[in-house]
Image (cartoon, rainbow, N blue to C red; front, side, top):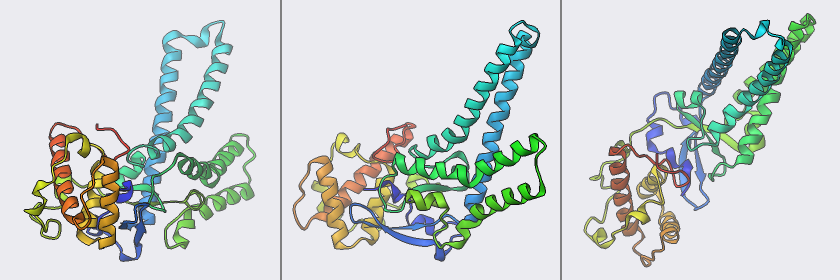
Amino acid sequence: MSSVAGTTALQQRRPGYSAKLQRQIITPEGVPLNISIAAASARAGALILDIVIIFGLMLAYLLGILFFVNIFDISNTSNAGFWGQLFLIVTILFVFLLRNAYFLYFELGDRSATWGKRAVGIRVASRDGGRLTADAIIARNLVRDIELFLPLIFMVSSGAQGQMSGTTTLFGFAWVAVFLFFPLFNKDRLRCGDLIAGTWVIEAPKAELTSVVTPSDSMIFQNEEAKAHYQFTNEELSVYGEYELQTLESVLRNGSDDALVSVCNAICRKIGWNPGSGEERVFLEAYYAQLRAKLESDMRFGKRRADKHSEAE
């Protein structure tokens, strides 16, 4: 089951949700999932927050350098020139790594979202419904340099050298504006980096595990007595996390018979079971109930597992 499954019917009740942004994807297991594309305003808000955070970290670094210089009175030592060059080199490397590693680190993480994206409730996802790859994340973030940071650095550098002309300023702002407003002119709100990387940004509202469904929901559980003979060990339940639980909920609510069979077979291959033909729903209901109970129990002890690819935290 795919980690994209965090988008369920809960997202359709998100304030400000627009039906025009609703999409359906098919996971590699053949499961149809409804998702909601992140609005352009949410993406802009997340980017602004991320830039503020990056500049805040840069400011903290520079203040740390100044504190170090003052404490050890480096400016008045015989090696002041050496230390000045060293700090300059370290600063250039720090800014480069911060500007690039910030996005790569968080978007390659379990939540596939930077601090800014988490704050507004969105995340990066693969458009084919599969797992995000490092290649895709690297590609979409390298393109961001061309879209945003390179023209800004060029304008700042020109201004510092006193070479900033009206034409240079106009060209720089036009360059940034074209890429910033590009998502408004395509239905999936994709920026150029998303087009190249095969990604998009989707809604990912925070939701407690206990609010996903109620155990008495007849749309989920149709075979309370029949599924009692399916019992799973802790190891068999530990292979999946919250996103997979929500995928299973979506399949049990809305999935076709083919989707039930596909997901059942995927789980059975993963844990080494063979429930038998015709009992797919019974098997999935039993697995759902026990997986849900395990995840809720883990949460009470402060442990959460986002999906099958992550470790409990």
